[in-house]
Image (cartoon, rainbow, N blue to C red):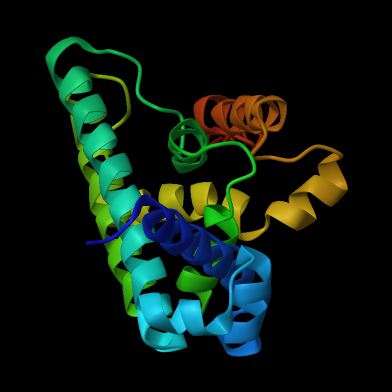
Length: 211
């Protein structure tokens, strides 16, 4: 029989691994590092997960499960758009902020998943791309966005812009003076994004009439 203490230790080990993997990368983190973070012995880490590879698989599954929940939330949002024109979440970052606790290590871990070619990261990117494409299709049907000849390219463009907040979070915080994934920072980012999408950034050029 597994005790409550064992379950608590197992979750704490996983969460410490998640934070350290996101901060340094899995290859730079040892079982001893994880054990020290969790306040347990290296032997207990191995007891619960077998090896560092086993622990990483558990972390990947945990993160993927969280994002599956976010995808479900986005699907509900998509149904609301299609049925009554309710407001869609402004961006990937907004959904991410709403679905994760403050100070979560998941954005940093997600950044590593996406930038290292990890299969979990590839799956998450494709699923979010498909959700973005379906959201734009629903908005187009509801008259909320213009039609386009290449919906895949548009969805990919919008997704990449949204993911930039996660991937370049530290750099954006440096130049903007506010964390773009904190509520006030996200509000500022969303306002700038909506302005660019709705009014554009290029000045229309007038065409000369033929003489």
